[in-house]
Image (tube, rainbow over all chains, first blue to last red; front, side):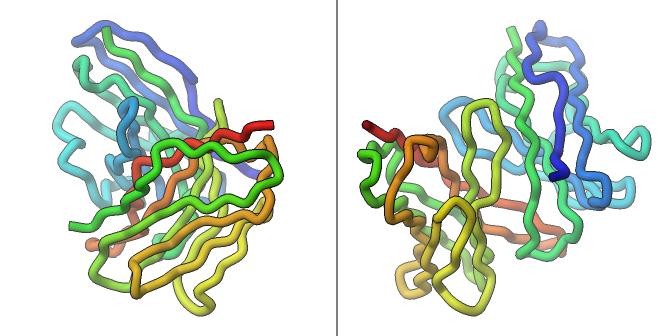
Length: 115
Length: 115
């Protein structure tokens, strides 16, 4: 069964450094998402992406964040200058359609620790 | 504001016993409701979803959920729990003011299964 993959599974970085989290969505999916979960808190929507453009972003997704589909398979989340509060589990998801009842398929997540 | 509440942070159930995980939502329009499960080291896997029709929906792994509009609830049930069901369970509502879907999650319920 096709699945969403994410690399790395864990990343430790120093405050102020740039990190890039990588995701390979399911191949025939057109809609891509990033979510994050700070330890002990809810899974929160960050951004959705379609046709090489951001469709929607949350208040969390400020100028320090960017997303890109650099080639036909990868979908990346970049944090330009990490802060301590960026420490979280980051989930990538993809879906075939954008309807509200559509299933989003999630990757296993990248656990980011900012020191 | 739209929100999802899972009142139980942890639940412990004996193997073979029945299970009910509670979920309440606050959403003005017709809700599109989802239950996801996260096992250690895994991504979020869809168990089932509701968007119209029969209010009792069947999912994978023997789970079911009942949508009750009058109570704004979408509780997850399983008649007989197996040790492999120990995981974290997330209820979510699908919404999309911009026409693109995003998921709003509850805080999750961690299920422990005792022998």
